[in-house]
Image (tube, rainbow, N blue to C red; front, side, top):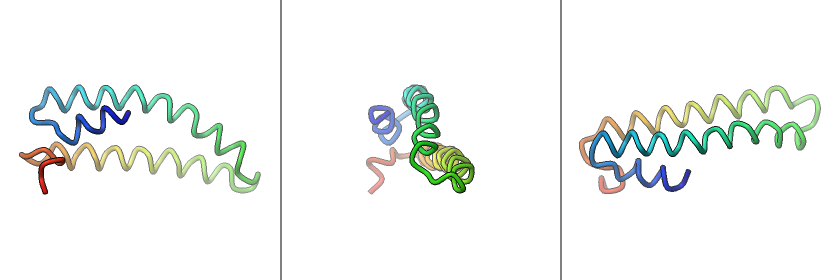
Length: 81
């Protein structure tokens, strides 16, 4: 996933962007499969449903924001300083 994030941040063309999103997508499967299980094990029983729901929603919201913000600029985000 870290390789995909670095590739997305430095994407100079659409092909680099798509390949970065594919790498991030593979990590997405691992994170979204294991995070709810960990939250369920660690959270108090009365808070489990809310925390698992917020975890999934915030992950996808962040991925959407990262995807749109890096693709909408002409220069790579890593070089946009």
